[in-house]
Structure formats: C-alpha cells, structure tokens
Length: 234
Image (cartoon, rainbow, N blue to C red; front, side, top):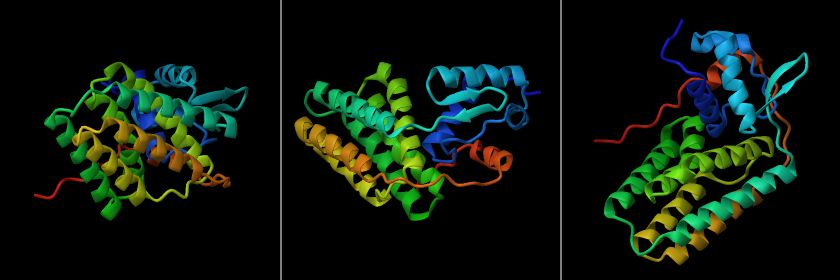
C-alpha cells in the first residue's frame, strides 16, 4: 500500500481531473475504485472525499455513494460572478508593470496552452486554460487567493462540462495573451477590463447538454491519471 499518498493529495488529483474536464458532474466516485487507483485504504479515500465535500465538489447520496456535484445554473452564475470579483480585484490591486520574470512565467504558460491546442489531448488543453488564472494569481503575488481561485475555477469548469461550452480554446488562449500584453505595457485597467470580458465570454458560451454515459469505474481510473503537460520545443 502506498505510503506517500495523503487524503489531501488524493483530493488535489480529483480537482485536477475536474479542471481537465476528465471528471463530469454527476460522476460516481467509487471508494473501492479510488482506493485501488491510489493504492491506499478506503479510510484514506473517505477522508479525501470529505475534504472535497467541504469544498463543495462532491456530495454523498445515502446508500448510493459519492458523486461529483452537478451545479445548478444559479450556482454556475454565482461561481462566475465570484471569479469576476476576485480576478478583477487582483488586477485592480496591481501597481505599474509587473516584474519581467512574472511576464516571462505567464508567457511560458500561454506557450504551453498554445502547444496543447496544437497537439496535446483535450484534457491537457482544458487544464492549462483553466490553470492560467491560478498561475496569474500566484505570479501577481496573491498567494492567499491561489487556492480560492483554483476552487472557483474548478467550479466554473464543472459548469462548462455540464452546460457544454462553445468557447473556442484558441480564443481563450488569445484572450489570455491580450491580458498579459496589457500587464506588460503597465495598463492594469485594460488588463482588468479584458479579464472581466474574458470571463463573461466563457460564461455566455455555455449551453445545456446531457452528461455522457460511459463505464463509470474505467472512466474514473482514466480521469485520475495525472495531466501530462506539453514540453517546450528546444
């Protein structure tokens, strides 16, 4: 049995799978499948699931088990509204041009996004496009908001998975690039406006779609495999 896997690490992998759109809303999280996947006890799995329940990502149904939550339209709207407040606030608090190492890190992330769009699988693409917002908070020095923003982004990702998004990945990547370009120019007001517009574009692109019905245990094992990030070309 694995000794280097904690309930927090298991919970983090589940959130990563949500960000990568590999776990669908309503997906059953079987304790035995999770225990076998991570080579841990069901007690440790249960602790991880309770952490995720406290964060609003899973729910337990009596005599049925644990499931990824299915956000209502109102809950999705709340999550997008919260992201607009947090992310526009991060940019509003920024003064002047960020350090060049910050811009370089953000541009590296956008480069990964573009490589994922060009050639990687859909899960890697979805994860990187969502993770840009977490990376931005971290690079702008708002470390206390990183976990908050990761959870909010995962909530809106669940909405995008449930209410199928028509927002093009290339458009998202281009909008990220425009935000970083505004920051590099020292125009934080423009970056803030671009961020609000970007989040609004993603929200407006949602439409109701039925959840897929595939083999649950097999899909869960596949969903919880780590996201493989594309390597930069030398």
